[in-house]
Length: 369
Image (cartoon, rainbow, N blue to C red; front, side, top):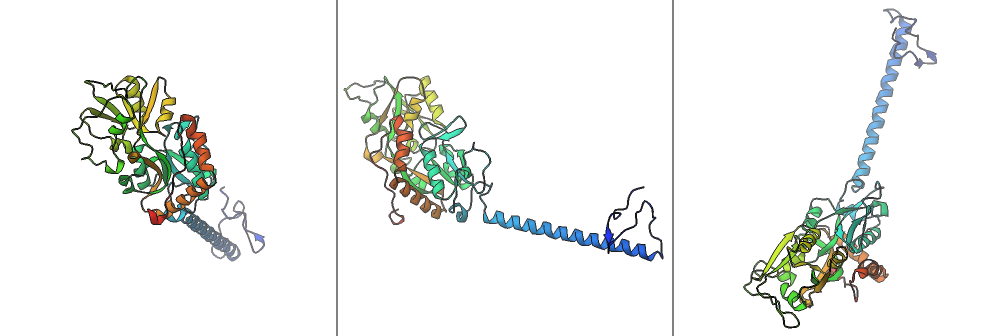
């Protein structure tokens, strides 16, 4: 016989009769019927109490999630992202608490490089210091790989809160994102085989200023001056340069008749083209290219554009409407420069590859921007 569901319930101090021994109450059996009714009422009250507790718990969770939208959800709203608390590397386990997601490169030794399960480089060190200044702990920082052509997009669609990935602060880029910084001064450069005659004069003629790099500026009937320093030339030979889509230097390559530009999505693809002899040079800058040269076999050299008019500055990008966050990042960068940590990162990450910084960049005030 199946036991009655209230067989072990006590009402008013006495147990209900067991349904193993007692049939269902008949009409007129008042005492048993009253006990059963009381037990049923007690069960209904208990069920209603449980429902109320569950509803209260759900409401509390909803309030917590509304107050901390970064927790496990990637990018945050303006109000919470600026309250910051730390950074979790993509390989350091499960994030603990609210997180901040930062886009970095993964294929540029010295800047942002993924190796042995972790990110390293100058951009990564700067990103970690900025996130900590915003209040995030190390296990709340999430690094995500971002390609140059996707840097603004990952901010727009919420996949990242910040991008610190060699993002040059050009007028064109500033129309899509809000910048903090600059945090590094660089110059356009090319990486080429050691036996080519490309020199500074040739490279200076290859580029134009970033903020003048309209489509009209890149269309020219002029020939690139390939006269080497010793007066020799490279006759009957066009120059083929590889550039990465989405980079400032890609837009800065002037449109000479004897210059062919080949584009790829990554620097690794450009380096493969250089090693295969498909291109004569890879366009980049004096912070990006040294790590690539050190990371590849062969005899290469870097020729840097000497023109002051062609200089670039890296900035930390946030979504265009998050200006408060950009201001707080500016404050973090100023602190980093003042306490010497910026120079330590340069010495540890970039100097071994040959980058030299005579002084830190100047971060303008809000009124100067």
